[in-house]
Length: 201
Image (cartoon, rainbow, N blue to C red; front, side, top):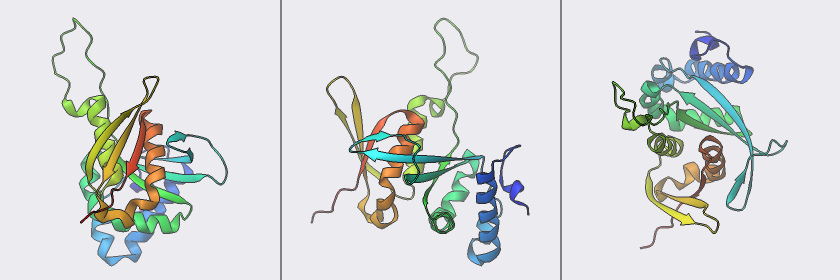
């Protein structure tokens, strides 16, 4: 199978071809992942160069800044990716050592219907802005679960959302929290902070 066959795009970028080649190499070298990896394809990849300042995320293209590799997959394929996501993320982060790998489903937001216009079909809840932003959060932190959400209102009307993550997966995601914040902010324009509450017994 060629690298091109892994990408659902007519004109793949050099980075997309590199990641597709890494998928094929993992397929051939890992017997346990081969069957799960074979049917998987992705739509596109975005690389984000990020730097964070305090709670506020600033997108600056700087050499030496942390990088996130965001792989967009078709929504129907998401369950297949979830089966091997932990191992696949670990292996891709070994191959692309300076980058954090994040898998997201490529979802579409439909605009609100205009007043006075009767649509033949009602807009599905899953295509609303709020629903898509919530799903981006769920995809981003998988396999960790979100155990709580808080909203902090700042002077001037701005707000920051605090997302509390399950502490049992702390080793898998602790090093990626800054990347999660920056990627979410870049994709949605919303300020967000991830926190893993310590267990108290």
